[in-house]
Image: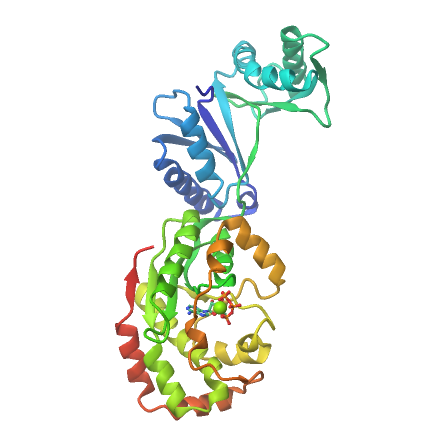
Amino acid sequence: MGIFNTVICRYNEIATKGNNRSMFENRLVENIKIACSSVCSVKISRIRGRIFFYKDDKSVFSDAETEGLTENLKRCFGLDSFSFCLEDEPNMEKIKEMVRNSAPYYFDPLIREKGKIRFRSRARRSDKSFPLQSKEIEIEIASLIDTLYTQEQIAVDLTEPDISIGIEVRETTALVYYATIRGPGGLPVGSNPPLLALLSGGIDSPVACHMMMKRGSHVDFLTFHSFPYTPMESVEKVARLAKVINQWQKPGRLFSCNISEIQKLIRDNCTPKFRTVLYRRMMMRIAGMICDKYNLAALVTGEAAGQVASQTIENMSVIDRSTEKLILRPLCGMDKNETIQRAVEIGTFDISIEPMADSCTVFAPDSPVLHAKLHTAEWEESRIPDLDAALQATFEKIEIVPC
Ligand code: ATP
Ligand code: MG
């Protein structure tokens, strides 16, 4: 059975925002509400730099609810940390009563395990009219703990305690908590304009999506396949990846585009070594058309400078000029190992490494151009008859697939 009836949510970067701070805060409140909604219905209140929530009837959260809320809040961007608290009226008697009732849940098992444990109390007081100062509250609470346990069981340690009792006193409420859980940081999803990510089945692009969500953008996904040259399972694999990263946002849509007709036109009309760069330029154009239709602000890819042939600075420059949309490449300066580590952390790595043919490799040349020139790429493209009509036809066949 749980003991906590309130959750205190802390945020960091948002607090540095000037005029539009309340927009960020409102968005975070909305996202916390969504994160809680699958677990229980909650009331949220906001007081000076802190967000609190509790159940409609202020009853305690059950163990299952605590577990569910913890899991969801750990994926709520914008949250720096959160704590499950006991909440009551802001007077010293009530605060002591809360500590007396809750301390055994934390102290007793640890004392059983370790013999003797070290603790401290940490108080914050935003209500300066409260009769005791923070230091005095801390001493009162430490003295109370002293009366509950013997000297063989406990000692005060201000620097490296086993248990830290947090106390917050505000105008209308007092809170007691024992643990601070790290949130994912960043900005709340929805506080920046929505994006369209080019999501392959590889390791990089899911990480790129996650990074842009962390900067406050909702992300929809676009994957290209080349059926019948690549199997439809490649789309199913991408759908599983999208499902994993959708856990950090209100689920985004997955657009699936068969680009094989365009690839055949490139194969039949252009110099082979330009194929990869030209595929990429076509992908960006189609992605731009989706942005226009669905009001998405920019594109995201998992490209990193110099990683493969299509990702040389020169080739990325030529790819950039295929669309007027901004192409965000959050991994650009990252080491592959850093990306892999993040992929493991967010849970996409194991899916990404499943072997699967990618549409970029269809008809891929043995030695692709490493330093393409824009005018050459444009000239190669001009050799394709009715390219715009072909792009339009491909665009019209795009499907939204479940993820
Ligand atoms: P990833 O691991 O993300 O596939 P990569 O290192 O394998 O990246 P490329 O295959 O060259 O590199 O792809 C670079 C980027 O182009 C990808 O990160 C992704 O954003 C986009 N991309 C590549 N293939 C596809 C595809 N089939 N569908 C959608 N986007 C793709
Ligand atoms: Mg790839």
